[in-house]
Length: 69
Image (cartoon, rainbow, N blue to C red; front, side, top):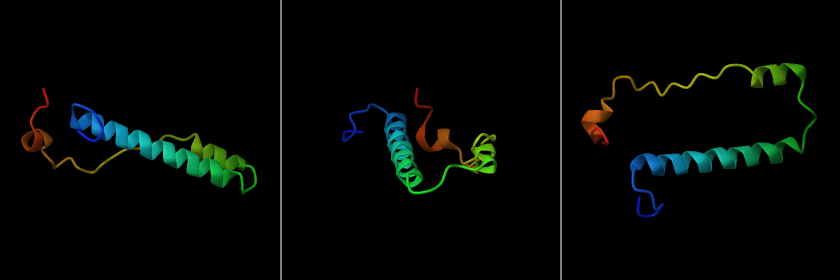
């Protein structure tokens, strides 16, 4: 937290995820310049729903880290 200047672990995670997403967007943009336009199937796949699941239902984060309040 001292390194990032945030006052919570959540802030650190938010910054890390923002950085990761930015780098991935830039990487994909650079990669896209070297190939042909997306096909209709690729566009349809990108527009589809996304499932986000950490598969960590068995972890009691409150017991490990407190309520954060």
